[in-house]
Length: 262
Ligand code: DAK
Image 1 (cartoon, helix red, strand yellow):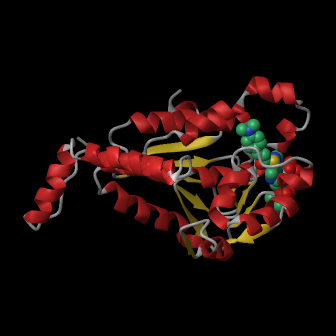
Image 2 (tube, protein in one colour):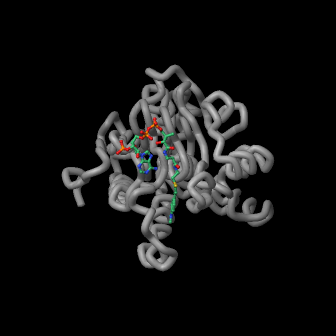
């Protein structure tokens, strides 16, 4: 599947030097995440992960919505066995396994699966009008793509309980104060700000970035000792890269490093 064939996302692999952009593109439905969109997103991320020119990926929506959740109209008539057969978790798991850093640039609604998708990304930049929430409870279900886990780890038990059990939304400022997101900027700047962050990351060694991302994510899955061992191995591994020599050499020679990803 090339980017020409995508129906519900727009992909620009060379949006800026070393930065790719994926735009969720079902504006009339507030970017509701139907199955096809999620498959396209999985495929696009896999392609960008393989593309050596790409060092950082931004996922965005539009000003009104990052994504208002999974597509309720598509889910309405499904039963548990239908969901089991569709196995959308395979898609979400693959997205989570993307090796390159992903920044969510969020404006408007990031709800349900939309909030979960943003939280699956590595960092979140939001516009002042962004709203985050897990409103699944209001339609008789509960979060299913990490909402109860990632939100709780980010904002703590009390606020996560309140959001998951009442479906209430929080604004960007509160999301920032509670550690859910990295930065809030005026509405017209959220994509620029995400690009700024992506550019900073793209200057670093892609090898070190990959290993560092993997190590930070390990903190969500392991106890401290296991995580520390994992970190240690990845730390050693960075010394197998030419980028490590280049980075340290550049420091000693008082110049800017030129990392190549080897
Ligand atoms: N699904 C389908 N259509 C949606 C939608 C959604 N989640 N959200 C909005 N839309 C559609 C509306 O139906 C409407 O379409 P038309 O009626 O015009 O055809 C259009 O987008 C504009 O929406 P509104 O007219 O409602 O716009 P408002 O500004 O009045 O309200 C709103 C905006 C975001 C507050 C409202 O649209 C809303 O409450 N939307 C639903 C939010 C929600 O409940 N989200 C959670 C959905 S459940 C899984 C992974 C993930 C999930 C499940 C499984 N697996 C891996 C198995 C996730 C589940 C969910 O996200």
